[in-house]
Image (tube, rainbow over all chains, first blue to last red; front, top):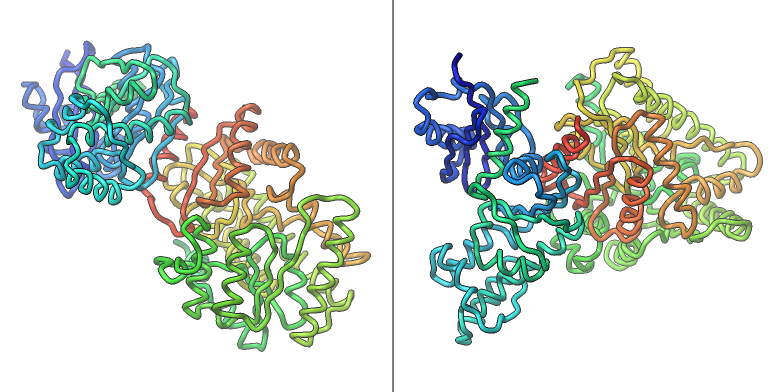
Length: 264
Length: 374
């Protein structure tokens, strides 16, 4: 009998992610930069993942495909779409069934998600349209510091005393940080202030859904070590590490849904 | 979109729509109002007719922001923007209720910047009871006297009673139309009904009644709403843009019932036109609105929503309010807790007056439907 593959494709605001699973677990994944057209991003992300599976060359070789992310409804060849909130919950649950609370920080929004015992969504809260505290915010900050994003993410770890910065508005925060740098304050302390401000925004969001261990962080910003440390400090909980790249959790959840839906 | 739908969408898209033009062409005078606590019948006497104030298609509030701070709700700021732009110059006047500080500031700034020919503010108590009733009756009579003086129309009991009868026929027709949404597969969507409601609040009651009947006839007994995943009761303050309901329904929701200021509640309750018309209207204002601005009655407001959800077989409740709305901001927080305790799934949404963040709204609604296992 031919082996069945189930895929999830998460079209976010900055990247496209694809995860392919079979009956035993994850067999391939990919992360590609976002194209203007979400459909094209989906094609590229899936094509990248297909490279790892000899039997799969196109989406028609998949048993079922679920789209998610902001571009989820723009993937015409997906069997259906599921919101990224449900997919992050299911993806995290798939990795660790003990997960009860998720903070998902993506390219353009932040979500707090409370997870039921079966991986479904119990409650959720989202930030509004402002980009403050999202991946785009960190990209802008890294540019101000003239650093790569990964370098900026680690900068605050060397801080001795954080300098408070506002994260209520991306534009004001940028202006504030430029002034602090011009005043020759230690970059690590300013960076710690930036991370702390974002962590506090997440705190507000998570308190709306409740913070119940085990807590984890998903989305691209989960790779930001400075932010994770600040979140742990502000929330007074340890962030559980996941067994897969936290950036592909949404796509993984979509793949898990694809498997469930294929079974009917 | 069917022909009646196209017509209705057009009526909702313009603050000075063709029904208003048509009525003005017959010498009728539109009076704007901003709150459900204004008894529409008092604005529909003789040649007058009520128009619910909206700012459809407002692109920004740059001029209004000079006068109203960013923590004033965007509904108030949008109305001021349109007023400063001369978009309401066709109105014969405005009638306000001192219902919240935001609309009071709008009223102040209209006086200051774009003073209408006629402007009146009703002072309605925040509590019920005999003294409040007596006060409200006098407030309504004061409004009637002011209208009579300014527009030279008869505002006697018989004239007001006649307006109440005409308004009653309209609300009866709308109520009957709305009740069709109790069906498992209603003949029209929540967006359609929202459009009917908004059009009906922008025309003389008699003309609006014709419109409702035309719509009802066009719909027939069909059950042609798109397949849906979940039925919703939509709750909250002012919501005059049917496009918002359309986004909810684009995700598989079907809005089958509503309790928001510009929706089918509170103004669709029947009012007995017998007896003293001012007493009947005052009772409606104080007791019928069940508005969160009232200091009492939270339990009744919760029960009303729970009962409505059951009556219309709603799977969940969506509470929407405009950012910085004090009245609904406070009410919504308590409502979420109370409804969840009653076993009703709830989604709480904050929005700007102008439709924006559509993608996020879609995600929230879809996730809400999924969280209900639908």
